[in-house]
Image (cartoon, rainbow over all chains, first blue to last red; front, side, top):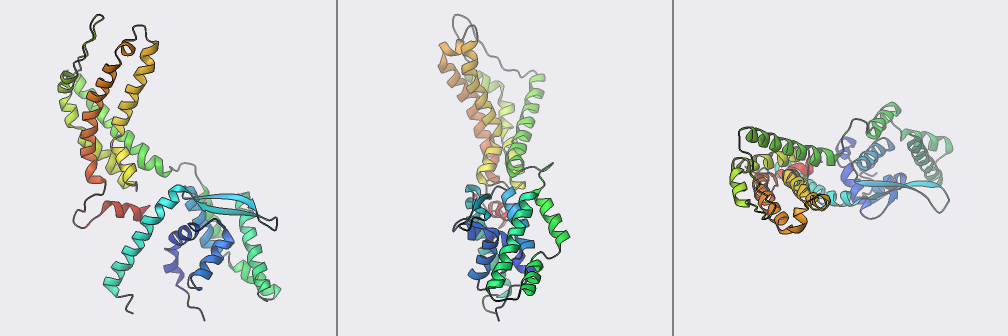
Length: 113
Length: 215
């Protein structure tokens, strides 16, 4: 059975997760949720209720841009892509998380557990 | 909100179809797709909150325009006070020979110029507080100078329509004026902004990384 990260812990990482995924290319909402689950081996899973408010929040900040496009099946999807601002925010966000893990490791020895 | 409804409905539809493709029964697929919603009232509130734009400022307003305007207003208020205290500039322009006493003007404005680091610091600090990046903090700190430079830039077309058009005949004075008026103030503002640009750590505190965390 796949071990899943506690939603309370996972919630804090949703911003970085979405930005990191969209840095690879545009995706629509369901695809984002599916890719996050697949790429993390099921450890991270964001439900619609936590994913979309964050997508809209990031869009409002100008980090993402949503655009309606029809896919191959002719169904309209809202594809999200990183804006220049979003791309610039990703590097410091990654640094911040690295710094956080290093600090946590020094305190709680998370990598040795 | 129509776009949101369409998007969420499309997500549920995809979810339902994927589950069916995995061999899940129809009833179970519907139940699991609907479970994605969680607390629908809470979701609705969250989406409304993030979609609401009225009365909310965007990042640029908080990180650049407001700190910059605060710095500019404070600098101008002090200038007004100094002017009332009889420290007015003496610009001497004669019809036959134009004389621009740049250094004399700078000397008259020394009290004001010496206060510029404070205003630079104010702009950069306010921008940092609002989560501004290094470039944004620098722009907010130098805001009064940027406005001053724009004003000098506007003098060129303005003087072209003016009767005597002295600046058009002596454009070098415009450049000199810009240098004498804008450069010293810029240096002062820059000095004040520097501690807030995140180049140094104070007691292990790095303002740049702190801001990145806040944004």
